[in-house]
Amino acid sequence: MNFVRDVVEAAAPEAVAVVERTHSGDRREHTFASLAERSARLAGTLQQVGVRRGDVVLLLIGNRIEWVESLLACFRIGAAALPCNEQLRAPDLAHRLAVTTPAAVIADERNRTVLEAAGPACPVLLAPDPALYAAETVPSVELSPTDPCLVTFTSGTAGPPSAVLHGQRYLLGQRLQAEHWFAARPGELAWCTAAAGWSKSARNAFIAPWLCGAAALLHDARFDPAERMAVAAEEGVAAWCMAPTEYRIMAKRGVLQPIPSLHSLVAAGEALDPETLRMWREGTGVDVRDGYGQTETGQVTANPYGVPARPGSMGRPLPGVRAFVDAGELVVDPATVPTFFLRYLGQPPPAGRWRTGDQVRQDDDGYLYFEGRTDDVIISAGYRIGPFEVESVLARHPAVADVAVVAAPDAERGSVVRAIVVLQPGRTASAELASELQDFVKQRTAPYKYPRLVEFVAGLPKTTSGKIRRRELRLAAESP
Image 1 (cartoon, rainbow, N blue to C red):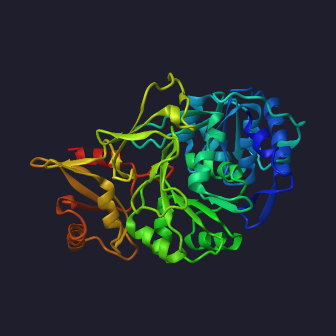
Image 2: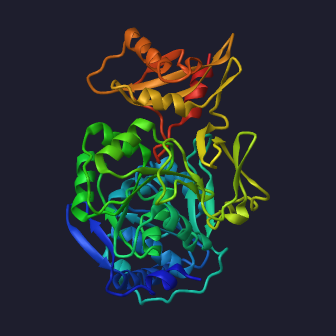
Image 3: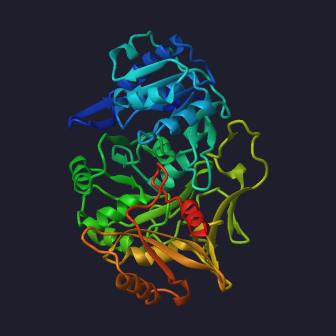
């Protein structure tokens, strides 16, 4: 198997593979023939600087065509690509360099300073540079499903990020979620807005669209709600994948509008609150369908395409995937997941069932509902309280811009619910507002779930992929 040979070079050569909206505002179209030829030359350049099959190549490139070509160059010769988010700072990059010891780095020129501060001990290639494509083309090599393909780091929600190694099977294995969840169709344009370096970006920016016969939209720009909606409308996006935070902000900013071409909206990472789901349905006429996966597993569950979405649910296991609830925790059978990882770097392959560490409940129809990480669930006076439900209620209050809910120690109850709130611009923190938020929760969910502690902050600690570092907030609450 080889993704480049089996997908890129097997496509109609002059068909549009990527529509690129550059940082400077230009619009470019790239064909499969162009990507095949340029990735073959870039692969030759990588071999010239010493990259061999199985080596790691660190990529620090924004959402631009050179990022796609760099991934394809690695896939072509059997190197393991390590895409990194541009928001990483020098210590983050130094950690990744130390853990993976890459044979080469391909970096965006605009990231040169932070990369140099991280101190890579290998050749560094900078993009854009025509010299990257000066080598002779090299052919795609034959690879096995378990040959290294991709390295992604976990979010580090509960500790230092771990390096997850995926095999070549991960690429073609995306067909399952691409068909049943993302649901782009032949001839359409699909857009996954995740920045390079996210696990979601690696699988949905172009891999999933191409497996469905669709083209991919690549937009190199900071998140702007109005611009995001305008670009989707201008380009005629049909299938759209965004982070839950982006869905929430766009809904609250009032930028939603119908897009005639749009028929699929998907989100994953953290469950969306019912109010945001309602606003997108009313604003666009399309349901946002939640799904669930981990860096280690790839996509595992989904609200399937063509079936009315269940608000608040991360859906059912994808066809053929065996996932079940054991003592409140989601457990997966790795043998049934085509995108399951090989191992953490430096560790042996995982054995037996995969315990996700996520607390879920399942209804009579088999739909799963996320309640929180195993160590995020709050036990107060015997009650088990999932933080997401309380966060969902608080997020509906007009004064709340962002919120996290964690446990705080309590002498009588063991723990109580603590809400850490970021206010909307123009709103002022006060004891009166804290009381108002408490009543707001009491009126909309079981009273025992209301936050007995409300704290106002300027911002929440988050990982580079936008997930809240609840462990950090819990530890702060536990400190004397």
